Image (cartoon, rainbow, N blue to C red; front, side):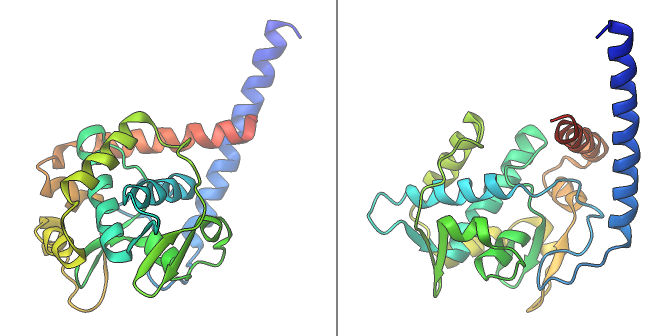
Length: 230
């Protein structure tokens, strides 16, 4: 194939992708997905949930227990993952899991992971391979590895674990309730989405909102293009 024909082919491919992406975005705006907790729209939150990374992050924290049970209280674990995503956004502009944040009675948590824990997602197949809930505990039943996590993310998860090693679930919950983004969106006994804007302002990074949103959109577009090309 000549260089000229190659660039013609690439140009056509990019146009096809752009049209496909645009149509998908229009369809997504029209959808109203009825889920118990998962936020129904992406307004105010530009990241995309990565289930494989989320599962590996859950598993990594459970493996830090250094005992044969590999179990932990589900509320405690979800708080630790919230801490990790929050800190990752503060340090890099991007979270680990891409999950949406939601304010609940005992502080903020991660929306889709909460629904996976309680089997409220239509397809739990991937989650169920590795994690199970028994009462208030979640247990690692098979190790998914950590191939989707980069070195920074692994080190951050380890740091979050060590910082909160001695804290029980309600101690961790009280710690999470100090975050201004939860106080601003305190839902009482209900639940309420936490916008990225609220979190960034709570960390003194409100001026970076547009930059972070643009970077997230570029990453998602690149991921979609890679799927089309591959």
